[in-house]
Image (cartoon, rainbow, N blue to C red; front, side, top):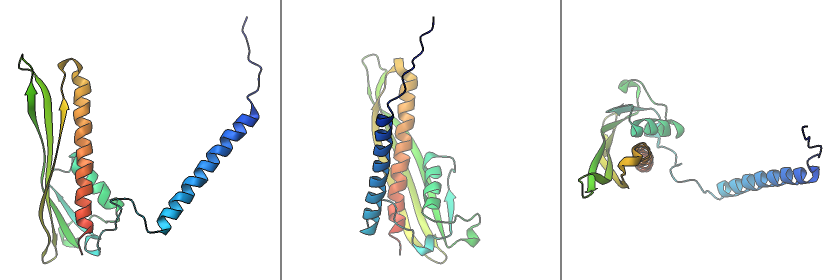
Length: 181
């Protein structure tokens, strides 16, 4: 014999939850409006200078974490990336995009127990007739522990670290680009 629950959900409790969600949404919208009214902007959301309105992006490798994130952030900032250098207002040359891994420590049986990831990029900005930003080299390093018995998890951790470093490098590069006049 099957037991059927014939109780109706408490409609007052459900109404209170809906009202609470609406109130939270209204409060968040009000806070965003108040912050934007006083001139507050999220870090990295500064507009690009006019010279970078239509840049040509020259990438060493367009498929790295940094390259994909950089292209995305430039487009999000309002840049209309150009397919040809001749049509652009400036050229952003990424000449170095390198991830290196080195062993920091090993166990008594000579098995690595800690690695360091270093992500380095170098970029420069050239206008139509002059250099707008001299070559900039930015490097970030993070270390992580390694355990042979959880190899997949540690590889996933290394991938996440690399992606986070790429996002951090893009944020730094974007701040330097927005400082151009």
